[in-house]
Image 1: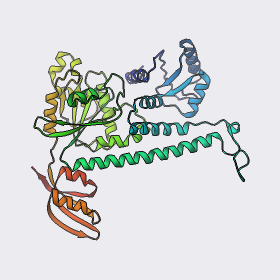
Image 2 (image 1 turned 180 degrees about the vertical axis):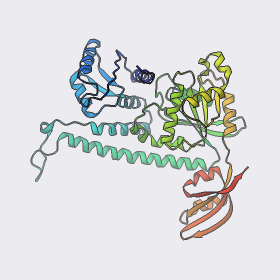
Image 3 (image 1 turned 30 degrees about the vertical axis):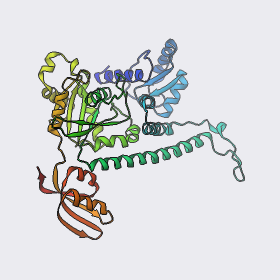
Length: 421
């Protein structure tokens, strides 16, 4: 088994335990060509059937995504429930979601996953319609289920769009006050919640299971310079995170994309730390946050040998970034959320990296109907010029970052030599 496959299997086993199940046996296969009907071929199916019977297993979990046909054929052959990695992650999310928003997001992802996997049983499931002009086979149960699921998906998307709009409004309101937002991101089980609790005393659930917390929490913290920032904890990432989940959790992940700084938390004691760093960078790119300033937080340093801790965070961070294929240097800090080691240094690093309502000269193109935005720029910024172009007000303003973020949709382009310290 290759190193990559071994890591993936280890992670699948951890996910399985996180879902409340025990791993009875593991089977690995290398095939030159995927079997269209069962993924693994007739001989391997027979082997799995024998293992299922021997261990009295209740579910068969594949690390590879299954097509609806493969899933049905496998369940028919082995006689128990068959799921793939995506379905397992969805099940864990369903168990861990606590808030109304989290449950909406998980249900949407589950329904989008389920819709193409519905299978009818021919005309035996058909039913008579009612009323004139509807006599005959009518809708099959499959068609009815699909229609109901599609209707529910539309309703959930509308509900989540309202959540997204509400979050955007909250971000704009926060932007009116010059308090930057710092978002924590990282691979699941990297210790983000423990670190968050250490920094904020928030009491967020933290345990050793993957995806222990899904619902974002935001708290204010005071830095050594006595500046205040808002610290936000977010859902953990994982390799092959289902696209349906990324889409469903878009409202939550936008908190990361709109942050002034990302604390990229990595379990530095893990043998797979570099791969985890690479995966987090990939997801950050997908949600439009790859350009946001980062601090690489090397967590769980208390588990490292003394000689590794003495090397310092910069050398370890440079090695991880190089192995992850990330060349730009990134500020780093070595900490332990469990013991509290390095917390003061991390706060100093945040103080050094994050800009505090820095002023830049920028141009805004604001519709005349939005008089509130024009008034805000006169109130909070220094207006250098103001012209009118049709139904637009074109303004050149020395604007603080909090105002620029609030009116980001109207930004035209930065003016040369525009930074004011």
